[in-house]
Every structure is written in C-alpha cells, then in structure tokens.
Length: 183
Ligand SMILES: Cc1cc2nc3c(=O)[nH]c(=O)nc-3n(C[C@H](O)[C@H](O)[C@H](O)COP(=O)(O)O)c2cc1C
Image: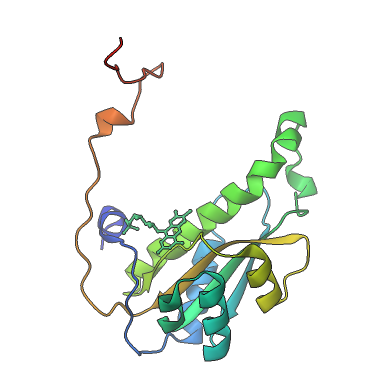
C-alpha cells in the first residue's frame, strides 16, 4: 500500500474477529508509534490482553465492544517528563502543558497507520473515566491516560470514508470566517 492508500483507507474498527494479535505485532506497532515527532518522549504504553482486564477498561469507557478486541493499549503520558533536552526556550516551557497531548497524539496516529499496513484494525478511544483506567492498569499520578486503542483483526471490510471540501478548512495567509446571514 502507498502511504496515501494507508491514510485514506484507515477507518475506526469496532468489530473484530477472534484471531489473536501476536506479541511481535504489538511490539511492531509500538515501535512505529515512537518514531513520531515528539517534544518529549513521554509516552507510556500498557498492553492489556487478559479478558477480565479488557472488560474492566471497556466498562471504564462504557463501550462494551472494546473488550472484543484482541488487545487494548492504554496510551499514557508522563506529564512530568518534559525532557530537559527539549526545554529549548521559555515559549516551549510555557506551552509544555500542551506538549504531552501532542506527543501522544502523534504516536497514536503512527500506531494506527502502521496497523492498517499490517492488516489490523484500531479505534481511538478518548471517552473514558480517567481515574478508573489509571487504577485498572496501575498508572502513577504523574502518568495521565490519554487514549485507549483496541487492536484486532477487522471482522468486516471497511467502508471508504469521505471528508468535506478542503476549502472549508484551508485558509491562505488569513483566516476568513464563513459569511453568515447577518454579514
Ligand atoms: C480524540 C478522539 C477521541 C475519540 N473517542 C472515541 C470514543 O470514545 N469511542 C469511539 O468509538 N470512537 C472514538 N473516536 C473515533 C472517532 O469517532 C472517529 O475517528 C471519527 O468518527 C472518524 O471516523 P474514522 O476514524 O473511521 O475515519 C475518537 C477519535 C479521536 C481522535
């Protein structure tokens, strides 16, 4: 697959077969994740394979289907790991509270695209009870769970996605808000 095919065919997968995902495949996904750009390598990945543990995180997200994935990866960010090496300047320091979110998001996207390349399905889960998930996998107070990523073999072929016109979101030089009836 070309990169463009991988990007445009990736869809959120919420139905999985029973086929397992190997440890090698999981490690490959996580290796690909860490090649993302980062301000600080703050990502922490907790891999859940135990059925009861998967059920617990699925309940913490109130999305029962998550437990049907072969594996659920909890992506956490060590919020104190603002790498000394990357404390380039004051502006970076002031904005560091946004960095761990960007660092983990970039890593998650890498992981999800690598999954497509490997014939695996994933879904980005951002809606869950943070305290419950932290407790289930034993995260310390400084590590914030950012997302859950169920991973498995898709049970059905994915529909091609659509996206709206680029003109609605792309602006050259200045942002031009859409005209309203009162303009
Ligand atoms: C930050 C974030 C949070 C999300 N949370 C959830 C979620 O809790 N449950 C879910 O089923 N999908 C969740 N999604 C997946 C989106 O619903 C999905 O990516 C979007 O509808 C576009 O569809 P596609 O991924 O198939 O292109 C989330 C995606 C992102 C980026």
